[in-house]
Image (cartoon, rainbow, N blue to C red; front, side, top):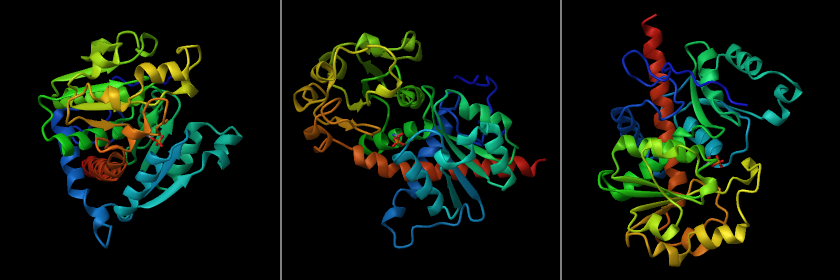
Length: 329
Ligand code: CP
Protein backbone atom coordinates (compact mmCIF):
# COMPACT_ATOMS: atom_id res chain seq x y z
CA UNK A 1 0.00 0.00 0.00
CA UNK A 2 1.15 3.57 -0.70
CA UNK A 3 -0.32 6.55 1.13
CA UNK A 4 -0.47 9.79 -0.87
CA UNK A 5 2.32 12.17 0.13
CA UNK A 6 0.66 15.50 0.84
CA UNK A 7 2.16 17.96 -1.66
CA UNK A 8 1.70 20.82 0.82
CA UNK A 9 4.84 21.09 2.88
CA UNK A 10 3.71 20.05 6.32
CA UNK A 11 7.20 19.72 7.78
CA UNK A 12 7.87 23.39 8.51
CA UNK A 13 6.25 26.15 10.57
CA UNK A 14 5.38 29.45 8.88
CA UNK A 15 8.76 30.73 10.09
CA UNK A 16 10.58 27.82 8.42
CA UNK A 17 11.26 25.86 11.64
CA UNK A 18 11.07 22.09 11.70
CA UNK A 19 7.84 20.72 13.24
CA UNK A 20 7.75 17.23 11.63
CA UNK A 21 10.67 15.41 10.00
CA UNK A 22 9.21 13.30 7.20
CA UNK A 23 11.59 13.55 4.25
CA UNK A 24 14.60 15.54 3.01
CA UNK A 25 12.58 16.66 0.01
CA UNK A 26 11.73 20.37 0.14
CA UNK A 27 14.03 21.18 3.06
CA UNK A 28 16.52 24.00 2.42
CA UNK A 29 20.31 23.69 2.81
CA UNK A 30 20.18 26.07 5.80
CA UNK A 31 17.88 23.70 7.72
CA UNK A 32 19.97 20.60 6.91
CA UNK A 33 23.05 22.51 8.09
CA UNK A 34 21.22 23.55 11.28
CA UNK A 35 20.45 19.85 11.97
CA UNK A 36 24.14 18.95 11.47
CA UNK A 37 25.34 21.84 13.66
CA UNK A 38 22.84 21.01 16.42
CA UNK A 39 23.93 17.35 16.28
CA UNK A 40 27.54 18.48 16.60
CA UNK A 41 26.70 20.06 19.97
CA UNK A 42 25.40 16.65 21.17
CA UNK A 43 28.06 14.46 19.54
CA UNK A 44 30.44 14.09 22.47
CA UNK A 45 27.76 13.57 25.11
CA UNK A 46 28.28 9.78 25.12
CA UNK A 47 31.75 10.29 26.58
CA UNK A 48 30.52 12.44 29.49
CA UNK A 49 29.82 10.96 32.93
CA UNK A 50 26.26 12.39 32.95
CA UNK A 51 24.78 11.66 29.51
CA UNK A 52 21.70 13.84 29.86
CA UNK A 53 20.39 17.34 29.11
CA UNK A 54 16.90 18.53 30.17
CA UNK A 55 15.74 19.76 26.71
CA UNK A 56 12.79 17.33 26.48
CA UNK A 57 12.08 16.93 30.21
CA UNK A 58 8.36 16.32 30.71
CA UNK A 59 7.86 15.25 27.06
CA UNK A 60 6.83 11.75 26.00
CA UNK A 61 8.14 9.93 22.94
CA UNK A 62 6.38 6.90 21.49
CA UNK A 63 8.40 4.59 19.24
CA UNK A 64 5.91 3.10 16.76
CA UNK A 65 7.79 0.52 14.71
CA UNK A 66 5.57 -1.50 12.37
CA UNK A 67 8.72 -2.98 10.75
CA UNK A 68 11.82 -4.50 12.34
CA UNK A 69 14.70 -2.30 13.40
CA UNK A 70 17.81 -2.55 15.53
CA UNK A 71 19.85 0.65 15.02
CA UNK A 72 17.10 3.21 14.37
CA UNK A 73 14.82 2.18 17.20
CA UNK A 74 17.63 1.82 19.77
CA UNK A 75 19.26 5.13 18.86
CA UNK A 76 15.93 7.01 18.94
CA UNK A 77 15.33 5.59 22.41
CA UNK A 78 18.83 6.52 23.62
CA UNK A 79 18.56 9.97 22.03
CA UNK A 80 15.22 10.66 23.72
CA UNK A 81 16.53 9.48 27.09
CA UNK A 82 19.61 11.70 26.74
CA UNK A 83 17.20 14.60 26.18
CA UNK A 84 15.38 13.53 29.42
CA UNK A 85 12.13 12.53 27.64
CA UNK A 86 9.96 9.62 28.79
CA UNK A 87 10.01 6.83 26.20
CA UNK A 88 7.35 4.27 25.35
CA UNK A 89 8.30 1.51 22.91
CA UNK A 90 5.05 0.13 21.52
CA UNK A 91 5.48 -3.53 20.65
CA UNK A 92 3.32 -3.81 17.55
CA UNK A 93 3.37 -7.62 17.61
CA UNK A 94 1.64 -7.63 21.01
CA UNK A 95 -0.36 -4.39 20.58
CA UNK A 96 -4.00 -4.12 19.49
CA UNK A 97 -2.84 -3.32 15.94
CA UNK A 98 -2.32 -7.06 15.60
CA UNK A 99 -5.99 -7.51 16.64
CA UNK A 100 -7.19 -5.41 13.70
CA UNK A 101 -7.08 -1.90 15.19
CA UNK A 102 -6.36 0.65 12.44
CA UNK A 103 -3.24 2.82 12.37
CA UNK A 104 -5.36 5.91 13.13
CA UNK A 105 -7.08 4.21 16.10
CA UNK A 106 -3.68 3.29 17.55
CA UNK A 107 -2.44 6.85 17.09
CA UNK A 108 -5.55 8.44 18.58
CA UNK A 109 -5.15 6.25 21.66
CA UNK A 110 -1.51 7.34 21.98
CA UNK A 111 -2.53 10.99 21.53
CA UNK A 112 -5.11 10.55 24.30
CA UNK A 113 -2.18 9.62 26.59
CA UNK A 114 -0.66 13.05 25.74
CA UNK A 115 2.38 11.81 23.84
CA UNK A 116 4.36 14.68 22.27
CA UNK A 117 6.42 12.85 19.67
CA UNK A 118 5.84 9.77 17.53
CA UNK A 119 8.73 8.06 15.78
CA UNK A 120 7.18 5.94 13.02
CA UNK A 121 8.58 3.15 10.89
CA UNK A 122 6.11 1.60 8.46
CA UNK A 123 6.24 -0.65 5.40
CA UNK A 124 3.96 1.67 3.41
CA UNK A 125 5.42 4.67 1.55
CA UNK A 126 3.82 7.90 2.74
CA UNK A 127 2.64 6.47 6.10
CA UNK A 128 4.50 9.12 8.12
CA UNK A 129 3.10 11.96 5.97
CA UNK A 130 -0.40 10.51 6.41
CA UNK A 131 0.01 10.40 10.18
CA UNK A 132 1.43 13.94 10.31
CA UNK A 133 -1.58 15.21 8.37
CA UNK A 134 -4.00 13.56 10.82
CA UNK A 135 -2.56 14.12 14.32
CA UNK A 136 -3.37 17.11 16.54
CA UNK A 137 -0.98 20.05 15.96
CA UNK A 138 0.94 19.64 19.23
CA UNK A 139 2.36 16.22 18.21
CA UNK A 140 5.59 16.01 16.20
CA UNK A 141 6.07 13.09 13.79
CA UNK A 142 9.51 11.77 12.86
CA UNK A 143 9.77 9.34 9.95
CA UNK A 144 12.02 6.38 10.85
CA UNK A 145 11.60 4.83 7.37
CA UNK A 146 8.47 4.39 5.22
CA UNK A 147 8.42 1.78 2.46
CA UNK A 148 10.77 2.74 -0.37
CA UNK A 149 10.06 6.43 0.14
CA UNK A 150 12.33 8.02 2.76
CA UNK A 151 14.56 7.50 5.79
CA UNK A 152 15.54 11.09 6.55
CA UNK A 153 17.31 10.64 9.91
CA UNK A 154 19.49 7.89 8.36
CA UNK A 155 20.40 10.29 5.53
CA UNK A 156 21.25 13.04 8.03
CA UNK A 157 23.46 10.77 10.14
CA UNK A 158 25.19 9.80 6.90
CA UNK A 159 25.70 13.50 6.06
CA UNK A 160 27.06 14.03 9.58
CA UNK A 161 29.51 11.14 9.05
CA UNK A 162 30.67 12.57 5.71
CA UNK A 163 31.11 16.07 7.16
CA UNK A 164 33.06 14.73 10.15
CA UNK A 165 35.43 12.69 7.95
CA UNK A 166 35.67 14.88 4.84
CA UNK A 167 34.97 18.41 6.06
CA UNK A 168 33.24 20.33 3.29
CA UNK A 169 30.65 18.75 0.95
CA UNK A 170 31.82 20.79 -2.06
CA UNK A 171 34.11 18.85 -4.39
CA UNK A 172 33.10 15.40 -3.10
CA UNK A 173 32.28 12.47 -5.37
CA UNK A 174 29.91 10.09 -3.61
CA UNK A 175 29.06 6.62 -4.98
CA UNK A 176 25.98 4.78 -3.68
CA UNK A 177 26.22 1.10 -4.60
CA UNK A 178 23.66 -1.69 -4.58
CA UNK A 179 19.92 -2.12 -4.27
CA UNK A 180 18.81 1.42 -5.16
CA UNK A 181 15.41 0.17 -6.38
CA UNK A 182 14.14 -0.77 -2.91
CA UNK A 183 16.15 1.76 -0.91
CA UNK A 184 14.45 4.56 1.03
CA UNK A 185 17.92 5.34 2.40
CA UNK A 186 19.35 6.02 -1.10
CA UNK A 187 16.45 8.32 -2.03
CA UNK A 188 16.97 10.41 1.11
CA UNK A 189 20.77 10.41 0.73
CA UNK A 190 20.58 11.62 -2.90
CA UNK A 191 18.38 14.56 -1.89
CA UNK A 192 20.57 15.47 1.09
CA UNK A 193 23.85 15.20 -0.86
CA UNK A 194 22.56 17.38 -3.69
CA UNK A 195 21.04 19.95 -1.31
CA UNK A 196 24.33 20.16 0.61
CA UNK A 197 26.22 20.68 -2.65
CA UNK A 198 28.48 17.69 -3.35
CA UNK A 199 30.17 17.66 -6.75
CA UNK A 200 28.75 14.34 -7.94
CA UNK A 201 26.31 11.66 -6.78
CA UNK A 202 26.77 8.34 -8.58
CA UNK A 203 24.49 5.32 -8.39
CA UNK A 204 26.10 1.96 -9.10
CA UNK A 205 23.86 -1.09 -9.59
CA UNK A 206 22.69 -3.72 -12.06
CA UNK A 207 20.00 -2.27 -14.38
CA UNK A 208 17.35 -4.34 -12.61
CA UNK A 209 18.05 -2.51 -9.32
CA UNK A 210 18.00 1.04 -10.75
CA UNK A 211 14.52 2.63 -10.59
CA UNK A 212 13.16 4.13 -13.81
CA UNK A 213 13.59 7.93 -13.84
CA UNK A 214 16.00 8.07 -10.87
CA UNK A 215 18.41 10.19 -12.98
CA UNK A 216 15.88 13.04 -12.63
CA UNK A 217 17.14 13.43 -9.04
CA UNK A 218 20.50 14.67 -10.35
CA UNK A 219 22.66 11.54 -10.28
CA UNK A 220 24.98 9.72 -12.68
CA UNK A 221 24.19 6.06 -13.33
CA UNK A 222 26.76 3.25 -13.60
CA UNK A 223 26.33 -0.47 -14.07
CA UNK A 224 30.06 -1.25 -13.67
CA UNK A 225 31.57 -1.07 -10.20
CA UNK A 226 35.10 -0.10 -11.35
CA UNK A 227 33.74 2.89 -13.32
CA UNK A 228 31.21 3.89 -10.67
CA UNK A 229 33.57 4.06 -7.71
CA UNK A 230 36.65 5.34 -9.59
CA UNK A 231 38.18 8.22 -7.56
CA UNK A 232 35.12 8.37 -5.29
CA UNK A 233 35.70 10.09 -1.93
CA UNK A 234 32.82 8.26 -0.27
CA UNK A 235 31.51 4.77 -1.11
CA UNK A 236 28.11 3.97 0.42
CA UNK A 237 27.12 0.31 0.20
CA UNK A 238 23.44 -0.71 0.45
CA UNK A 239 21.87 -3.92 1.68
CA UNK A 240 20.15 -6.22 -0.83
CA UNK A 241 16.53 -5.94 0.37
CA UNK A 242 15.45 -9.47 -0.43
CA UNK A 243 12.26 -9.03 1.63
CA UNK A 244 11.07 -6.37 -0.87
CA UNK A 245 12.05 -8.29 -4.05
CA UNK A 246 9.06 -9.88 -5.73
CA UNK A 247 10.64 -11.24 -8.93
CA UNK A 248 14.01 -12.60 -10.06
CA UNK A 249 16.02 -9.37 -10.16
CA UNK A 250 19.41 -11.03 -9.74
CA UNK A 251 21.02 -14.17 -11.16
CA UNK A 252 22.39 -15.22 -7.73
CA UNK A 253 23.92 -13.73 -4.57
CA UNK A 254 27.36 -15.05 -5.50
CA UNK A 255 27.18 -13.43 -8.95
CA UNK A 256 26.00 -10.19 -7.33
CA UNK A 257 28.95 -10.30 -4.91
CA UNK A 258 31.37 -10.96 -7.77
CA UNK A 259 30.16 -7.91 -9.69
CA UNK A 260 29.00 -5.47 -6.98
CA UNK A 261 30.35 -6.69 -3.63
CA UNK A 262 32.87 -4.24 -2.15
CA UNK A 263 36.12 -6.16 -1.79
CA UNK A 264 39.62 -4.85 -1.06
CA UNK A 265 40.43 -5.22 -4.77
CA UNK A 266 37.45 -3.17 -5.91
CA UNK A 267 38.00 -0.51 -3.22
CA UNK A 268 41.38 0.16 -4.87
CA UNK A 269 39.50 1.97 -7.67
CA UNK A 270 38.21 4.60 -5.22
CA UNK A 271 40.24 7.59 -3.98
CA UNK A 272 43.05 6.40 -1.64
CA UNK A 273 41.40 8.33 1.24
CA UNK A 274 37.87 7.14 0.46
CA UNK A 275 35.65 6.22 3.39
CA UNK A 276 33.30 3.23 3.27
CA UNK A 277 29.79 3.55 4.69
CA UNK A 278 26.77 1.26 5.07
CA UNK A 279 23.45 2.04 6.82
CA UNK A 280 23.26 -1.52 8.15
CA UNK A 281 22.36 -4.23 8.67
CA UNK A 282 25.31 -5.49 6.61
CA UNK A 283 25.38 -8.81 4.78
CA UNK A 284 29.00 -9.95 4.80
CA UNK A 285 29.96 -11.77 1.62
CA UNK A 286 26.86 -10.47 -0.19
CA UNK A 287 27.42 -6.72 -0.54
CA UNK A 288 30.67 -6.26 1.40
CA UNK A 289 33.79 -8.26 2.26
CA UNK A 290 34.55 -8.56 5.99
CA UNK A 291 38.07 -7.22 5.43
CA UNK A 292 36.49 -3.98 4.10
CA UNK A 293 33.63 -3.77 6.61
CA UNK A 294 36.07 -4.13 9.52
CA UNK A 295 38.98 -2.37 7.80
CA UNK A 296 40.59 1.04 8.36
CA UNK A 297 38.52 2.85 5.69
CA UNK A 298 35.20 1.68 7.17
CA UNK A 299 33.19 4.20 9.25
CA UNK A 300 30.16 1.92 9.54
CA UNK A 301 30.13 1.74 13.35
CA UNK A 302 30.82 5.47 13.70
CA UNK A 303 27.65 6.03 11.61
CA UNK A 304 25.59 4.20 14.24
CA UNK A 305 27.01 6.34 17.06
CA UNK A 306 26.39 9.58 15.16
CA UNK A 307 22.76 8.48 14.78
CA UNK A 308 22.16 9.33 18.44
CA UNK A 309 23.34 12.93 18.02
CA UNK A 310 21.33 13.43 14.81
CA UNK A 311 18.17 12.03 16.40
CA UNK A 312 18.66 14.26 19.46
CA UNK A 313 18.97 17.24 17.11
CA UNK A 314 15.89 16.40 15.05
CA UNK A 315 13.69 15.67 18.08
CA UNK A 316 14.69 18.79 19.98
CA UNK A 317 14.20 20.98 16.87
CA UNK A 318 10.78 19.47 16.06
CA UNK A 319 9.49 19.86 19.63
CA UNK A 320 10.77 23.45 19.69
CA UNK A 321 9.04 24.16 16.35
CA UNK A 322 5.75 22.69 17.62
CA UNK A 323 5.99 24.72 20.85
CA UNK A 324 6.56 27.98 18.96
CA UNK A 325 3.69 27.17 16.59
CA UNK A 326 1.37 26.53 19.54
CA UNK A 327 2.36 29.79 21.24
CA UNK A 328 0.90 31.67 18.26
CA UNK A 329 -2.55 30.01 18.54
N1 CP B 1 19.80 1.63 9.04
C1 CP B 1 18.68 1.16 9.59
O1 CP B 1 17.58 1.70 9.35
O2 CP B 1 18.84 0.06 10.40
P1 CP B 1 17.68 -0.65 11.22
O3 CP B 1 16.75 -1.29 10.25
O4 CP B 1 18.37 -1.65 12.13
O5 CP B 1 16.95 0.41 12.01
